[in-house]
Image: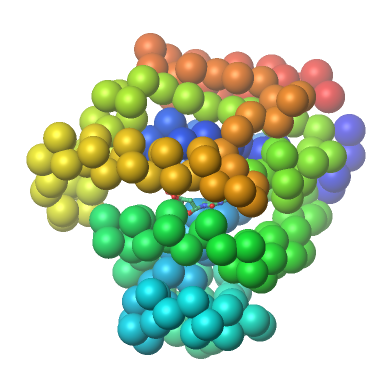
Length: 219
Ligand code: DC
């Protein structure tokens, strides 16, 4: 297939390895990684900064024409402010999950995601890439891993960024977030009917990459 038309969607819950795999895959394909979770995080960060995260009307107003851009290096900007380094905290994780249930917020971000995806190759990671945003993508992957493995990875990721949190707290927070992401009315986390399901609990990163690259090579 034409490289310019290639979109690989990677969906799955927190800690399933999406970001690591999407990054590695984009590198191997010589394309870009589209981190859509970062966009919901940027919206949540802006809402919290403005003190409107619990004000539904103000949230709708904020979503309308939300000035989000992602540059070629993957830096996330709201207006002309680079928020990339401020959106990975547990507080913003929780707010991103809570605010992403609002249909108007999703409606504001989806066109931005689609506009950034082509020309490919693009590796788009999120919760609804294969089901809603890129239903015609030629390669769709749904990653899972055991809850414990995912919480352990998340804990290590946070520790690497300087935030030390007890395993039980990371796990509890993850269970709450998974339930919300899976049960929301609009674009819930679920595999597309034509997605390849991959449990990464016992797999190494190169094994996962090779598995997906074999699928890409076949399209
Ligand atoms: O992938 P992440 O942990 O950075 O995503 C943060 C939150 O954003 C996640 O809990 C749900 C939401 N999200 C979403 O609803 N749809 C996406 N495509 C990506 C993320």
